[in-house]
Image (cartoon, rainbow, N blue to C red; front, side, top):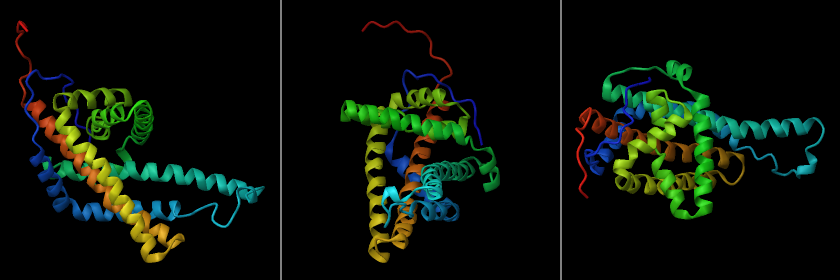
Length: 260
């Protein structure tokens, strides 16, 4: 599933990125991969919901978790923190495999995806990105949005090119720099739309089944089904479109004098 060979250079005259073909590729991904998105979603989002829907403090004060029950409490918190991360990594890998098959004919089954995904690299990259975003938003809102745009392609870079965390940060920024404003126009609204869809999914679960465990479970599953495929397909479409422009660009540009 790793496609080495992407160049880290910043072309002097990059092919202009168009938004409409990217949106068309997202729609094509939904049409082609819908069975995969649905099957992987059930496999991933239902177990995540079963764990995250539990509220360890529901009906219990914190000081009631003592002795042996405190171990259960800590294990539950650890599961609620780690399982969604692992599930998100696996799901993004499945979507990437589906898109690679659609575009290049490279077929990967779920067992191969589960076996070959660089989980720790992707998790460390996610945590590092969250930290950088937090610093950016604390410093000022605009730097936070710049960070979101620069590093939107970290997961596809790791999955497709097999790069480490630092390399993935550098590579994502290098890919996006020539197309920064076009990518920002897509990624920033996408973040808000994903949050809106997930919030709507949670509200739907609570409206149908109440505020207890069943409502939390349904809300978690629906919110993940609404938000996760959209984000994964969009950043993959961006990655492939920019890679294609890199591959079409000349291997080297002759030196030119700069009279500006």
